[in-house]
Length: 428
Ligand SMILES: Cc1cc2nc3c(=O)[nH]c(=O)nc-3n(C[C@H](O)[C@H](O)[C@H](O)COP(=O)(O)OP(=O)(O)OC[C@H]3O[C@@H](n4cnc5c(N)ncnc54)[C@H](O)[C@@H]3O)c2cc1C
Image (cartoon, rainbow, N blue to C red; front, side):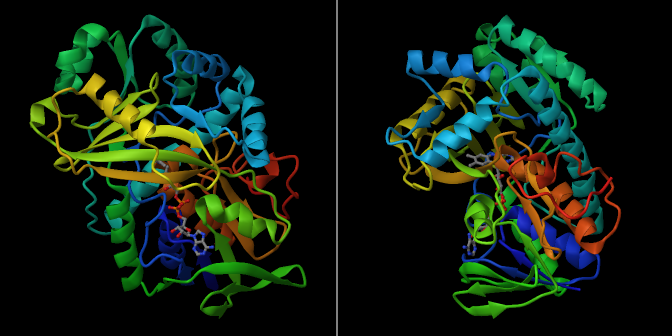
């Protein structure tokens, strides 16, 4: 079957890989000159299978209040707030209760677990190098209240057989020797031994090269303008470079999916939550992170990528404004100083980056069929698109091919939204 994938971020690229592996004739369209040039370019690099959680949690409203009062909020909202931002915040707020949190986390863990297996499948298919490390990840606790909160997650982790260890401060330093300078400030940590780290941009490029070998056609510098419908089916995609036709179409346009899909009456509640990263050279190995460290209190992640450290985080609700906000970058830098004070080489030329997380209010991506029989979605991966990419690509390929997916898509497809049009198929 001829399939067009719209978007060549990590999600579109892995979709193309699994579609090609299942024997389809695949074309990928993207406005950039190569793969992973937007949100998949310089994210935090965590493959956080065990840590997968929605941002909307019971404690979030109170945390927001505290952050605003202390003036150190990782979440910043533009003063001239748009209707889209208000809608997103309201929908997210509706998910900030224990019941929704448990449901949403369970859905994310189902896909995350599957993604880990799918990534291992890719690694067994061919030799792929993306600065990967398999040393787990560590969530830090700065006070005992955070440990109590984490206990709520532990019952869900156990339900999904996610391997974890609760560590005391000694254990944290043993896992990450660079934490020795802040040992006295820590209360402990939650370690996920089966988490990985890696460079999402390198991974996407390696997948791209393999896709080329498998005969996938990439059309870069191609701006998608609209999707054309005929007889309740998609008939073509109109772009700056002309019209493209296929039997099936899959949308992976990240935060821009909503705009294109709304043209054909499909409502997806995806909002561009802007985040930032800084990449710095390692000064001394033993003072630098060995893997990924999550500081949930300050909402930052710190990852080792080769001879560099990447610190990433912040949530800036500003619609599609791409400006680098100096204050957010300073907060990231002080977040790194707090955890690994002697880890990086001071330099004037640090690598600053910003990207839009394609976020749904419940944290789970949207994968599966639509009311149009030949249009599929693989989008809305928010904070964890790199983690979920391999499983999402494989799931999408099975759905497009008409195979029974290996995991249930209940709660992962668009049927979970009451305002969306119900889709024509229900799997598993
Ligand atoms: C600061 C930050 C840190 C993060 N850290 C992590 C992490 O540690 N682990 C993790 O799992 N995830 C992380 N994420 C999330 C992850 O990066 C995203 O979920 C993921 O990159 C989304 O991939 P995507 O392919 O859906 O979107 P994108 O990478 O944005 O790809 C969408 C593609 O569509 C193309 N496109 C859009 N509109 C058009 C159009 N009209 N015409 C043609 N092409 C178009 C774009 O050019 C782009 O290539 C982080 C995100 C941020 C911002």
